[in-house]
Image 1 (cartoon, helix red, strand yellow):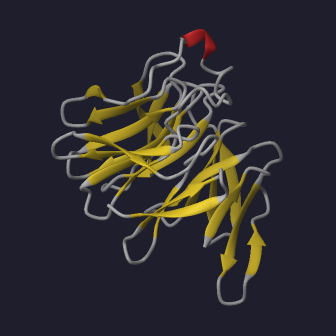
Image 2 (image 1 turned 90 degrees about the horizontal axis):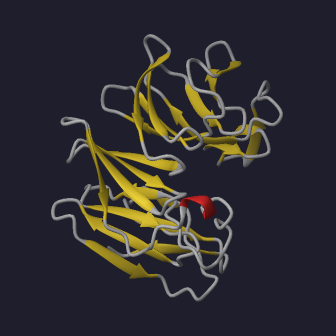
Length: 249
C-alpha cells in the first residue's frame, strides 16, 4: 500500500510484515497529497505547497520533483488517470485542471474555473466521458464534458459563500463545503462528501438526480474521504465523530 503524508512523506506499507518504508528525496515543505501509479511505470504525486509533481522511478530508485510548465502557486492537489494513460490534475490555487502527457512530460491542456473556486478533487467517468470536480471554495461541483468542451455545474443544496469570505470561512461549521468525490464500481452514482455539512450527496449519472444522504452524524459531524474495498463496497471517513462508515447504495 502506497501513501503520502502532508509531513513531506511518501511511503509504502507491506501488509504481510507491517513494515513501512519511506522514499528518500521528498523535499521539506512540499506537502504531498494525491498519488498514482501511471502507465509509464512511475509513481507520481502532487506537492501542494511547493506546486510541483513528484515522481519515483522504481527502476532507478530515484525521486525527482518538478513544476514542469505549471503556473506559480498552483496548489496542485488531486489526480485522475484517463483511459489513454494521461493524468488530469486539480490545481486548487490556480482554479484550473491541467492534463499531463506522459510521453512529452508536459502539461498540454488546461481547463479554467471561476476565480477563487478552488478545484480540489477530480474524477473521470467513462460512462459520460466527463471530468467531475469539487470546487471546495465555492461549494460547487463541476462537470466538464470532454467531447463538447463544455463545463456545467451540478445542483447542490448549499448556498455559495460570498467570494471575499470563502477562504476565511472554510473552517466555520456554518458553511458546508464539497470536498472529495468518488464513483461506484458500476459508475451508476457519483458520491460527494460535504465536510462540515455532515452528509453525502449522491448523483445518478444517467438522470442527474441529486439525493442528500444523511449519515447519522450530529454537528459538528463531517464526511471527508472515500475508499472502495476489493468487494466494490464504498466507505467514507468521518473525522467527526472519528468514524469510518460503509455506504449502502
